Length: 350
Image (cartoon, rainbow, N blue to C red; front, side, top):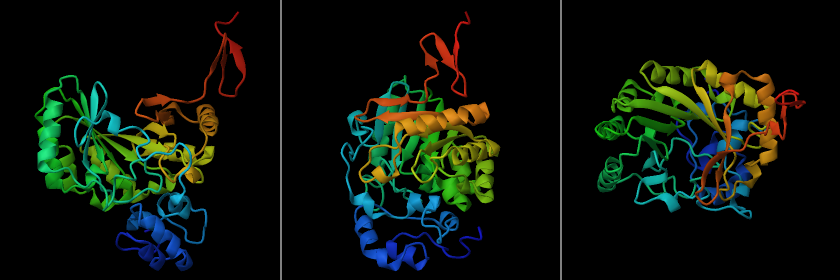
């Protein structure tokens, strides 16, 4: 275990009192943290708690998971459904925004709860819960009746918190839908709780017989510990492909050095960097968001100094349900193209 954490947390910390007892929150802050916890779920696993330096008030792991009183401040433009899931949800458990893929939201619980979660109004003990058997039947029938659906994405919540039996059942049923060729699962579990990536869970993940992608959400290179990398290796060696998802967060990864270290760590773990998400307009998250211009500057710095294998796409999910678009830096300027240093060159050359 990382020396910063020692044996501080042996069970998931799921309340401000537990965080304070573990030395991760000052006791005098308990009233304000309780107010946040009354609205938004709190949970921090031992694996991630061990990475926090309690003596660093700006610790980038703590910033992601320890409640902050500013979460109760709602800024202009923030919305409980910031990416417009509801506008594209024809039934419980399904979000169908793009023609060839659907989200199947099987559970609204996570091993850890991020302070910037764009579904923070839906997840946790007071959230939407696990999809019932009847609702799951209807959702799978919806997918089966639409041959254009090529990919099904299990999300929520974190689908890997389901029991292997339950997850395996869902994957096997997806395996029976001929036109679904790819199943993707979005998760934090391999980094948040590496020991939970058991042979039984891996067997369940691979039970569909389809091409399986696991998208790992991690935001700081410290999260990719040796045990987290080993958990990812078990998944990859079993046949799953892995990609990454990262949220650009102020005070966590909004500098080129940290982002580069994170993307290199993904590649070293055999995970292809996929998306760097601009922070969504979820309520109470303004203190964690950067500007798009700041994100573009960071992406330009990565382009000039980092292997192409380690380049994510910088993406904005347009509020209102209009979909994701890349918002990285522009290299074309009329008849000129900018090189990674910013110098412009005529193209085609005159």
